Image (tube, rainbow, N blue to C red; front, side, top):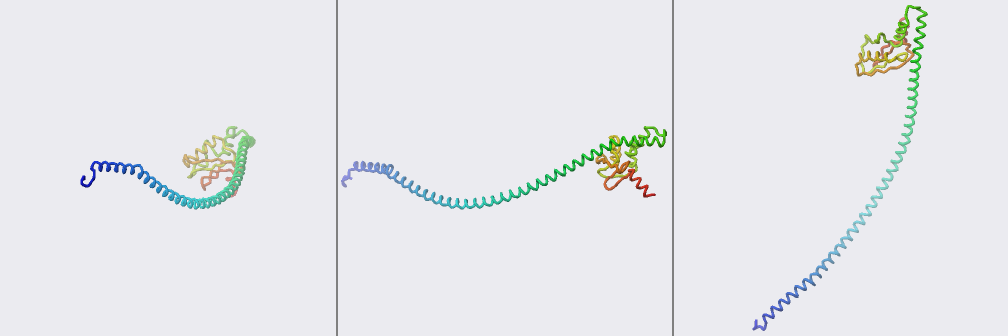
Length: 244
């Protein structure tokens, strides 16, 4: 090295200085500048990407706005149609409700009239019985006592004799229910006797309803399905007229 005119110690010192300067420049100048340039490139790229995304978003927003307007128009048309339909239905419901209420009032009046009719006939039954007993006494004198006369009159109106419905003794019935019609309202005891005999024929699950029709004059008419057992006085008179 001396032959070449190079001082080895000085050379190493310079080499170390160069290395230090290189490291310093790389760490404090080149590195930050490179990072700054890289960040700038990234910022520019991000800006371009944001601009592209913004453009796409604007285009999508315009399309979405058109779609929303179209859907809003369709929804508005549907709302108008539904409102019209509801208005028509409400009008129809009001008319139906009014008719139903009128029918209900009429039906209630019919029920009240029927109840009043049954009440009046129930009150009339005692008077009819008294008149019949008086007439019987005039016809037969003392041959029948008052208890016997009352028993015959009760049997005439109810069709029940000694706690039994005479017309049902030999009858064969089948069905889920029976309608029993009498000329005058039956007493609770008479209804119980009739219901007992009917259920004995139809079974304990059957339904028994009672009606009043003065036109049958006396006795009972029992209807089970299509079968009618006519033990009424009017029925017997009609049969007698036919035979004569």
